[in-house]
Amino acid sequence: MKAEFSNAQSVTFEPEPLRAPMPKADTYPVDALGEVLGKAALALHESVKAPLALCCQSVLASASLAAQAHFDVMLPWGQKKPLSLFLLSVAESGERKSGIDDVVLGAAKAQERIDMESYQMELEKYEADLVRWKTENEQQNKKSSSKSQAASDYTAEAAHSNPKPKAPIMPLRFVTEPTVEGLFKLLAVGQPSVGLFSDEAGLLIGGHAMNSDNALKTMARLCKFWDGASFDRVRSGDGSGSLYGRRLAMHQQAQPDVMAKLLSDPMANGQGFLARCLVAWPESTIGSRYINRFEWPGDRKELKRLFAVLMGLMQAEPRTARSEQELDPVELPLDEDASELVMAAMNQFETLMQTGNDLSEIKERTAKAVENACRIAGVLAVIDGGMATRSISKKHLEQSLILIQWYLKEALRIRGAAVVPPSVIDAELLIKWLKEHDYRAFRSSPVLTKGPAQLRNKVRLDAAIKVLIDNGYIVPNEPGTIIDDVSTKKSWSVHHVV
Figure 1 (cartoon, rainbow, N blue to C red):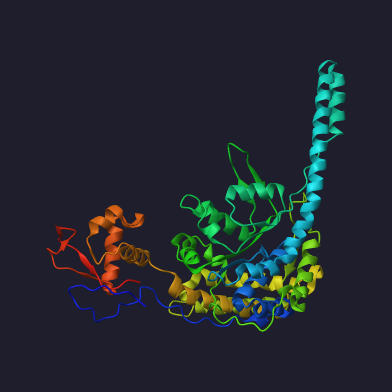
Figure 2 (cartoon, rainbow, N blue to C red; figure 1 turned 60 degrees about the vertical axis):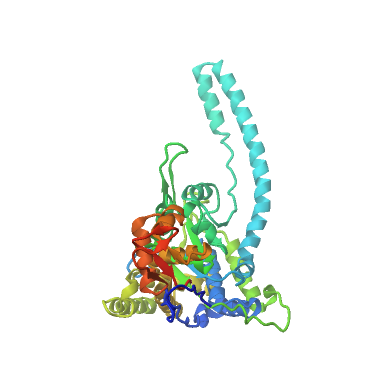
């Protein structure tokens, strides 16, 4: 219930909401995920009692991570793209985000743990071999310095026959809040296929990688990953290089206030990062999660089957090119029927993007819709066919187009409620600050000197005050009203708070 502040004027009106209410979401088309992923998502929803869309996001992200190391999709117009998917999920605290990931990512994390044990033994051997190699080289150099040039040439040849030991590849598959520099270093020594997964996306969104100095760089690099480009870095201090054949899938889960900052960020929208993301903001299930028995989700046959499929892909050796860390995924073309369906879908989306039509407000997302659909179709094909998969059928593309239409509708739904003008955000902050400091009437000076940092700007403060006046939260006082023992030219009385 909204608090009211009494003053000389009688308050008889209710204020207008500062944000549009979130419309009810459509049910996630779980059947379109297919036999393995769809039934696993339903089993998660039934056992963990988390929102169905959240369960679907998690299984689709884990499938993308498992498939991206082995396959690329060959688009009908000739481009080769990764099967990497970028997913963002919005869920309240207590929505059991971590409980879902513990189950769904079990295969990948189990394989990572097995590989880490072997890595530790290989690392110990490598370090011992490296010490031995350095010692032998030093001894050879000492000998060569006291001999003739011919002998030195012979020593050099002998040294060449005893090459420097090669460091083992770090089997780390998951990262949560990397900087661009940290990600480069990891991919230079670690697995070529990783997942940027977290059930606390605030670590990334509010961390060093996304601060005002680094946000553009981080989002640009993530876009390059989605596109399948090489990872180039030029530095004077710690070296330069280019990493080829790397893949990154992403699933970031966050509470509404955290994710809303990203979804309404002009840079994230204008730069193209969010256009590549598949976003879900399901309604909370908290308060309706009644149970009649205790059950460990991993015991469900549907999740055991998912675990087995994902583990098989994780354990399979990916095809590589010039090194073990440069992936050379198998190309998956769309079959003839699927290609014809893609053409029809592209034309339909083009019509829907025309001014005044359904998708005209989200052109940037719709422009990526067909490619995202092809990627999802590739993932679904691999989950069904495993390592023997060699093409994408019309059936899988039909499923993915059902999914992508849901994501587009979800983007429209979220856009109306989550993309909030800066003046409204400032207005919410101002009215909250006034409530916390028990201001029943105020003038601008205390806000400009002691208020929230972003409101110590006259232009922004004036805009926030106008929003609150227009929506009935504050009312201008008469000139000469005494506030803080000062006769004011401008002041306002607080009638309502959010």
